[in-house]
Image 1 (cartoon, rainbow, N blue to C red):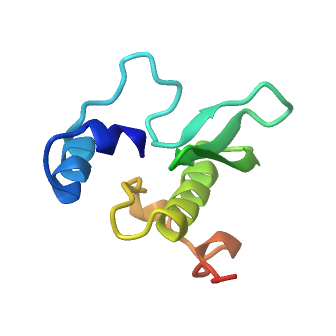
Image 2 (cartoon, rainbow, N blue to C red):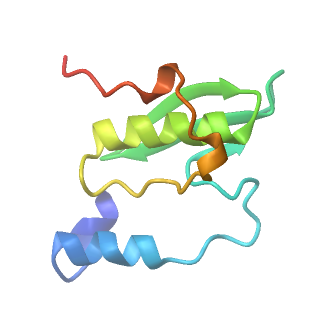
Image 3 (tube, one colour):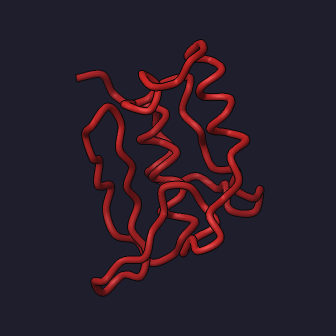
Length: 103
């Protein structure tokens, strides 16, 4: 969150500005936190927060990677996490929809 410390304004304004930021034109996926993977599975989910990188795994489709990102970002970042909007037809129950556990 190094960018926040350089931002002149409240924490809420900083996160609001992140949400409204346009997507990169050269992005591999339309989902936040999903990138191209060089291994056998074509997608990986990852994000960084407060200087630490979280690698969430490799996935066969970008919807699964986006769901993993949503779950992990909500647990680690909390209420300010910017989550992906996943279409309703892909919101079925799976093992990644359980709430995060506090260790």
